[in-house]
Amino acid sequence: MKYPVLRCAVAALLLSGAPLAHAVDDYWYTGLGVGYSRVQFYPADFSSGGTFEDSKKTFDAGFKGFIGYQINRNWAAELSYVTIGKFHYKYNNGSITQDAVYKASGVGFSLVPTVPLTRNFSLYGRFGAFFSTARLTFYNANFVAGNASAGVQSSEPSVLTGFGAQYFFDDENGIRIEYENFGTLGNACDSADPCTGRVNAKMASVNLIFKF
Image (cartoon, rainbow, N blue to C red; front, side):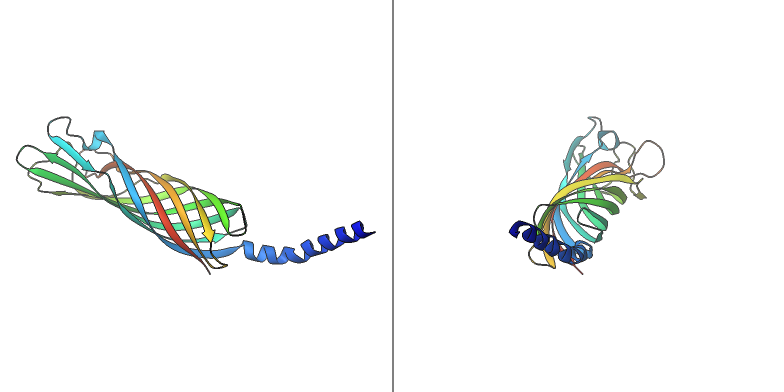
């Protein structure tokens, strides 16, 4: 008789705990993070084709803020704002260096599939859309390379992907480590219209996360 009794006791315990488990599986959260951003310039939009000596700075600090809703243990939805950073593409004609400064930021909407490994630690992915704005500003602009011209342009939405891990120290506060790919930002310099040129942007970040 002891085994049927034990089975009934375990079943009763699990059923009694089910509402509580459901209650902690869904919650709102917010967070802030800082990261290391890197871009890849599209040569067709920036390269002088050997006319000038080209150099570039493709990395900078990035910053991120986000708010999200954990729907259940395996899915969340998230809205984020990211300042990707400031990058440089330089041209030298032997006497003058022109600095093309590229800045990018944007808003992301994404689904976050989550795989809990323990009560406090989980792995997650990211898939969504990123709506960005890029700014290209020339300094020491005594000459202009290619068709690029200074301007601010909203990019076409790009595919936002990523993955990471998060750990909660208690029931309210935690930390995330994440890698994100924002896709192609900016617009092509293939016409007489003002353009920013295109870059492919990525960021690795460390974020604090808070439930509320």
